Length: 376
Image (cartoon, rainbow, N blue to C red):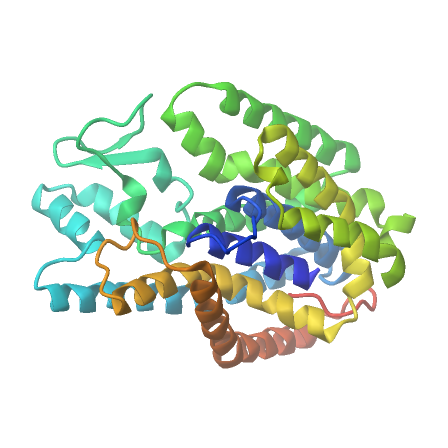
């Protein structure tokens, strides 16, 4: 499972760079949706098998999730802000995002800027920012059917714009204990209701519905709930207890599709890919749950996702390119540089934090049953 998470993260990296020669990676949107399914599966599993029921179990779950998300996020955000500050000093004027902030402040749009700042520090609301545009005359406003001339997307003011998905994850984590407590029919009903909402948004015309379908956490909920339902329905089945040999063929097929152009052909093929991932997730987890190497590769996926955009900016700056969002770097270069940066932050930040999380968990709550370690 960790290897799949790593490869999905690398698909997102390559999507923000020049394509790799001869390789067609999975669409970044599909990669993120698959991440949401994996996250739902993991949250259902650890809530059922690791955290005790009741208020103390929920408190441990929430605090451990925050300790997993925020340290690396805040370090990456600090780096991004310092990068733009240094670029501004070098250019002798506010660079890129800082220029947008300066313009909004000069025109008195402090309320909107305050909300953008709070969302960036807290991560909460980063999935909402893409639904807005900004112009000096109007300030921040909901998108309409088309972009208004002179507008910029409001997400351009975010220093880590790709982290909208982490804002969606926080929404899911907040609801996870309640979702896990639902009966199977309740989870299924929620899946259907949220799926219908997504379908309606996808068929609604206009830029706002398009951005909401892609970014808004509420409209990503079906994928998370589907992952939780996967655990609920399949935990006692043969799919949940395969040998590595039995898991190998479907896993190999899924990984092959991840690096083919087929899932990008349109929505039907994309949904078929997600269905395949839904079936393979429990098999991959059961086949690799005792693998230290697989766990290590999985630990890299979150920092890779966090760091690849600031790493891209740094590579472009080193090459003398000023327009960070419009320019591309070679996919192999961004992949290698991001892997190195992710490895460093895992060793220096995530590993010590993981030991702290494990110690506090062991002091305050015993596992419900003995299961191999999953990320807490």
